[in-house]
Structures are given as structure tokens and as C-alpha cells.
Length: 300
Image 1 (tube, rainbow, N blue to C red):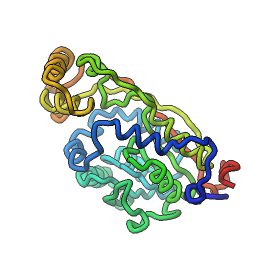
Image 2 (cartoon, helix red, strand yellow):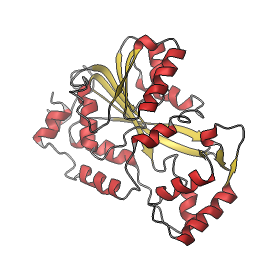
Image 3 (cartoon, rainbow, N blue to C red):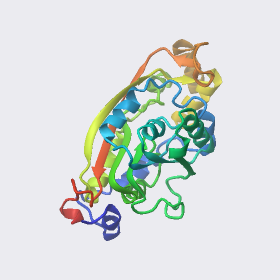
Image 4 (spheres, rainbow, N blue to C red):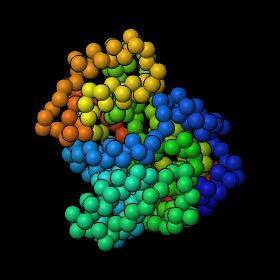
């Protein structure tokens, strides 16, 4: 059966709609692209408030077998890689932020599984073949909340090509946990909520993949390093072009709804007064030669 890469090269399309172009327009409307230096700073708090519910649900749905090789793309601080290594898997952890990789290495050492965890500095737009992560390099490829890329079809194709058996990923359904929708209302701006998973799902279908869709619900109290950090990040969330009046309104919103929690992680101790609920789309599919699933007519 035809792989996704072959379908992309052949120009196969089922929907007749250019979902990649729509994704580009969606990304162009966002505040700014992801930056490795920014994620290096966030590595100190990333995952520090996790209660393990999301990670447990992801691993249950992924159904990765003991002893399999796994690519964890956008591995963060190793919240999935370490338990996978503890289960006997060999995990290649890839991320574009060096501090994230350092955190993963440290977590693997502390868990006694450093010999089963390998880290690679890699971004979605990099040459995966040159990095040794080409076709059929692992049994399973995963991307947990990490599909931050302008070229979505290319990223999905890389995951599909890398996996011999299965691909699993999560993207937000509607509001992401890093966006405080109340802030938009406080400054009088409108926020159009778009489900990221619609683009992922339809691009896969467009190229002959038959994905499965399930959901994971997580709960988190948003936090920042301090009031100024919150003001800057929420301002960027809304485009970074706020007027003096809008900035003043945002400041009043923060004073009303955020406060310092001395017991929290220093990177996130300026906390919101509510716990945010986020629904994640868990999208998975089998590799064309895995013996299950396969491609539809567009990929035959």
C-alpha cells in the first residue's frame, strides 16, 4: 500500500480542499512562531505541575509494546520517554530546545534508564534523514502536544515515514492551556477558536490515511514567572500590538485574576484563579505495512 509520502508526491486528494494552505493562513494569524530560546526558559517549569493523568492516558491509548523502539518528537522534559524506557522501550527523544533535552537526560538518569534514552536536537523542518531518523527508523512515532510547525503536511509525512508500526499524536481541541480566553474579553478583543485537530485529521484523510480519533481531558491552573512575564506573554498571545489602553486593561485583569502562590514552582508561581480544562485530540494511525488498518482508495 502507498505510504503518505508517496501520496503527497502523487498529489492524491480525497477532500478536494487545500487544508495545508488553510493551516498556513491559520498560523499566519497567530502571534509568533515557536522559539527554541523561549522553550529553553520554559524547561524549568514544563511538566512541573503535571499530575500524570495526561501522560497515563496518552500511554494507555498509544498501546506501545514493551521492547519497541519509539521516536518521541518534541519530547519536552521526558514525561512520556521515561515511563516508556522503564517499560523496556528504547526511546529516541527529539526536541529543538537544548534545555528540554538536558531535562530529559537528567530525568532518565534519575530513573535509572539513561541507557535506553537517546536525545537528538531536531526541529520539524530539519532534515530527518540526515539526523538518522529516516524511513522505518522506529516501531512507533509519537508527538505529544508538540505539532508546532508551519508545514503540517510535511511534519505528518515525516512521522508516518519514520514509524514501522504506528503513529500517535495529540493536538488541542479548541482552546489550548496556554491561552487565557478571559484576557481577550478584558481588553475588548475577539478570539476565534479553531480546533487544531481538524487540520491534522483532514490532511491525513486527504492523503489516504485512516486515522482514529479519541480524546484526553487535562486540568491545569495556568501560571507565569511573575506579573510582568504574564503581561508580556498574554500580550503576545493577542498579537503583541496592544495599545496603551489595552495594556492597562490587561494589567487590571491580571490584578483581579492572578496572584503569587509561594508554594508553586518559581517559574509559574503567578497563578490564575481558575483551573483550566483542556480537551486534547489523540490521533493515531497504523503504518501501511503493519498488518492492520492501512490506506483507503486514495492511497492504494
